[in-house]
Length: 197
Image (cartoon, rainbow, N blue to C red):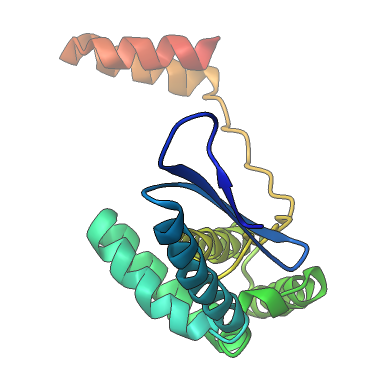
């Protein structure tokens, strides 16, 4: 039975619903047993309906709602950047898939496609691809929070190494310190000290 008494308290009931092997919903209901049974039946219908539609909503459809969320909750610059990434890279490749259909093999195909495009343009590095994959991953977490999918994507990023900064040579350091003495800027002294160490 999916409606059981909640500890020794009166008028509190466990509502326990299992849909398949992976999904289980539990909550506490306050009220009479009869009302708990009615609530459990309606909740079961609602959850079954939601599970049925989970695999049918596409990434393109979720992207519209996600961009509205980003526009409200993040900076305008971030919104514009995510909008550009989604419209030029993510939606053309993944748009007709649901998140349940996105496999590691499909993500690897996307990485390979983008690497070829960047190499054709003469761009080195993988940072741009990793940023795009971060947007896709964030959108999958958003879809999970909204109940469209049961778990977010697990995406392995491409290796990316930043170049180490080149220290100033002795002549440049001396010129820098000379300019700092004239302006008496403490930040310049601090910067010169850091570069020397």
